[in-house]
Image 1 (cartoon, helix red, strand yellow):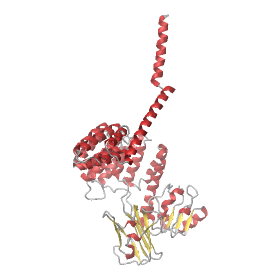
Image 2: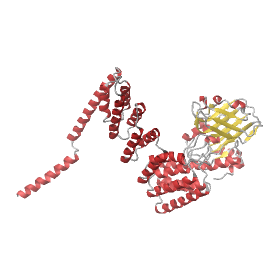
Image 3: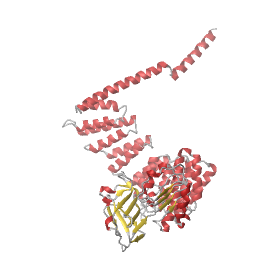
Image 4: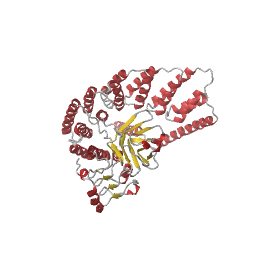
Amino acid sequence: MLCSHLRKRVRNCIKMHGRLKVRTSAEEAARKKLEQQQKVKMFRAAMGRILEKKTAQEYDAEMMELTAKLLSSNPDIATLWNLRRLCILARPEGEDSSAVFDKDLGFTEMCLMVNPKSYCAWHHRCWILENAPKADWQKEVDLCTKYLKLDERNFHCWDYRRYVVEKAGVTPEKEFTFCTEKIEKNFSNYSSWHYRSKLLPLLYPNVEDPSRPISEEKLKEELELVLTAAFTDPNDSSAWFYQRWLLGYAQPELDLAACRIDAKQNLAVLSFSKPINLATGGYKLTVSCCDNCNDASNWMPATDGNTFDTTWTLKSAFAIKQDSNPGMVSIVTPDTKELTLQLQTIQAEGAVGVKKPKFGYEFGSAIVDVLKAQLASCLELLEYEPDSKWTLLTAALLMKAIDRRGYHETIRQHLTKLETVDQLRKGYYLDLASKWAIENRLEQWIEAGTLSEGIDLSGLQLSVVHYTPYLATADAINLSENRLVNRNLGVLRDLVFCRRLNLTNNAEELDTTVLKLPLAEEIIHNGNEQQQLAKELPTKVESLVL
C-alpha cells in the first residue's frame, strides 16, 4: 500500500516538473508582461531625463551615465551615441582627454559584446579613434582578428577591418594571407571572398588589359580555388558569387553608350551605361563634328523630372563638320576619367555611333580551357544532383563565358529549368534570360552598322528590356511577341529617335500613354497593325537570329 502511494506521488511530481519547465501558464505570461512594463517605464524615464538635459544643453557626467545605462542594453540608438560625442567634445578643460577617449573605446567593446553587429557602436568607435589625441591602429587590427575568430562572417567587423588596416599601414600581402586563411577555414564567408576581390587587383593587376581586374595567370589559380570551394558545398552561394566576379559578371562601369545628331530634326541624343547628372557642370564634353554640342550644361534628361538619367537630349540647329576624322565623342567626368565613343557615320544630315557593351570578359585560350574543364565538372555534378540551382546557374554562366552564341539554346534551357527548381527567384531567371537574349540581337545590330535603322527584338520571350541606352539611335523597335507588362514601359523612354514601336502580342494590354517619345509616329499594340509595321522593318533586321 505504501509503495503504491509513493509511486503515485512520484508520478505527480514528474507531471508538476513538466509543467514548470514549459512555463506557459497565465501566471508566467503575466509575470513577463509586468517585467516588460517595468523595463519600458525605466527606459521612458531615462529617455525623458536625457531629452531634458539635451534641451538644456547639459552635456555632463550625468548625461554620459544615463546614455551608458541605455546603450549597454541596446547599443542601436543613434541619438544616444550622438549625445555621448557632444559630451566628450564639451568636456572640461584640463581633463585628461586620452583617458576619456580610452574609456569610451572600452565602453564600445562592452556594447559590441551585447550586439557585435551594431552599426552605431562600430561607427562611434571610428569617431573615437579619429578624434582621440593618439590612436593605436594596430591594436584595432588585432581586435578585429579576435572578433573574427568568434564570428568570421561578421561583415561589420570586416568593414571596420578594411578601415583600420589602411590606417595601420598593413600591407595588402598580409591581408590577402589573412583572407585566404579565413576562406580555407570556412568557404561560406561572403565578406572574406569580397575582401579578396578588392585585394587581388592591387597584388595581381592585369598589365596588358587594365579593364580586367587581375592577370590571366592569377585568374586561373582563383578559378581552381573557387571550384574547390563550390563543389565542397554546392548549395552554398558565397563561392558561386565570387566566381561570377571572376568571370566579369559585375555591374557595368560608367561609359558612353550611344550618340546621334540629326540636323534635319534638330535633335541630338547622348546616352550612358549608367545614370549621370550632366547638369552639374562638372563634365567636359567634346563632340568633334559638332561645335554647338559641346556645352554639357545645355543637355536635358530624356525623362522629365529626372536629375540623374542614362539618356540626355539636345535641341538645336546643328552644323555637322564632315571632315572630322576620326569622329569622336569625348567626355571627362568630374573625377577626371575620360570616356570616348567612335562615331561610325558622319554626314551632312547627321552623325551616329553606338559602342558595343561589355557582355563579359574575352578570355585567352588558357582560361577558356579551365572554364571548359569547370563546365564539364558542373555537368557531371548535375548528373547526380540535377536540381542543384547553383550548379545549373553556374553552368549557364560558364557556357556564356566560353561561347555565348554557340551555347545560347542550352543556356536558355538551364534558365527555364531554374524557374521550376527555384521558383522563389523565377523573376530573376526570366530577367537574366531576357538580358542575354537581347545581347545577341544587339551585338548583331551594332556589327551590321545600321545604327539609325530598326532593330528586331521580337519573339525573345522578354520579361524586361535591357540595354535601352544603346537603342537610343534606332528609328524603329520591334518588341512584339514578348512578355512585357506596363511596368516595363518606363525604360522605353530612352528610345529618343524611335518613330515606330511595335508592342503587339505581349503579356497584357499595354498602356502606351506613359511613353512620350519626341519623334514617335506609330506605337502599335494591336494585332491588325502589327503586319503593317513588320513589312516596314528592314529585311536585314528581320533576318537576324539568336
